[in-house]
Image (tube, rainbow, N blue to C red; front, side, top):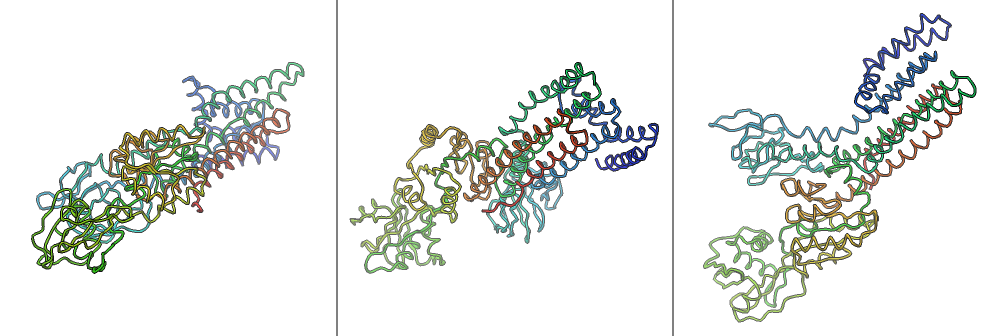
Length: 612
């Protein structure tokens, strides 16, 4: 647009200078007409196309009628200035829009154009779309991962900012899953492809972001409905303003001039441009913060959050077992009890067994273990350094003739017997995520009224987690359909105009994710269920990012309301001045463009980094 704006401004300046110096009309008029033709042809063409398609009362129509009318009544400088300043405002608005799109563009750049595939013992560079599931690709240091897969060999730090918003690199080793869109920073990786190009994480994110722009917020729908009534109304008002007073006064030139000024002022540029810009900026700011929101309507729903419902496992907790307490009996130390249990469990692949071995932390000497035997549903027995060790449930202890009392501790209990005597108990539980407690506190500080946890875990475990985090309520031992029924009950108690959010892992909780006003999937990029059912995704698997999303949604809503009130208020003032003859075309143009630019600048505040 600059290619037209700069010559147009030069022609306008030349014409205005000549006009002020008293040059004849045959000198000034061609300069103003040339300026108008250069900067206004696309607006005029859009107005003509709108008329041909039945969409008469558009912004282009208002600008065309008012500017041509100014030429018709001999106000040549004003007629050219209308279009020149209007196009200048459009140019500056486009610059602002480009800035708001930066984070979106960064996301759309996460999918590489090539992949290094290993075929016949040689590397070939091909399009990622040509790589089949099961083939092996090589990612060199500095390259972006083209397809989802599992690392066969190599170790590298991964830049995951495009997916998670986290600036700290993550380390990936052999056997780890790797998602497309990450960047290998300091090591080469050989990867077995697990998903096709179209189903890879990067492709899903890009589709998600592209679709988000199609979902309008209530504010955007308000603009659409408003424009259908507003535009014909101001055109009719302008016609009446030109005709009715002129019939009584006979001063057609004055009232036509006022009517044209009225039309210029009436263009709802500030509303039409700044509100979608604020919403788009909000989506971009959220993605930059590590929350992918599927549309502006869900951004608006986040603003009205009243109740947040959490899943437990994998959402508020790590989703993996860890040893929380060691309770030895007399004659045994905690270290000895853990060592004997770890050796006995060393051959088992059960999650509880793995957590005990990991808690022990030292290498296991296989020579110290013999006669290891797993008892389905009860536990294991083994000889450890010649001592008979049994690790398992209370039922297994009773089978050994031992009487045990469960300690007052939430979690899974692994009882240990050594040489036929009860030696103690190990409490294993799902560890709470480091930021879960802070998330609950932040939600409460944000004014979210209720935080509820729904879990399929045991009642004692669910209540222990809820008490530790300070939740407002918990329901445990729920099946997926029971979770859905619980959410329906919470909806019934929801105040009018408020929304319910659900934060879950995106796989088992798909029905509830779909039912909530905003279903947020935690770390669900690898899950088709999460992509389809959720309205927002937190790739970093950090519940605290929900608070960031709510803050951004509220700031977006606040700025949108400010723009609506400001634009309509200023528009009403300038329309009254124009109708009364107190505002000429120059004031009208500056008023319209000025209001639009101020509204756009206000909308750009959404991109500022949130202050917690």
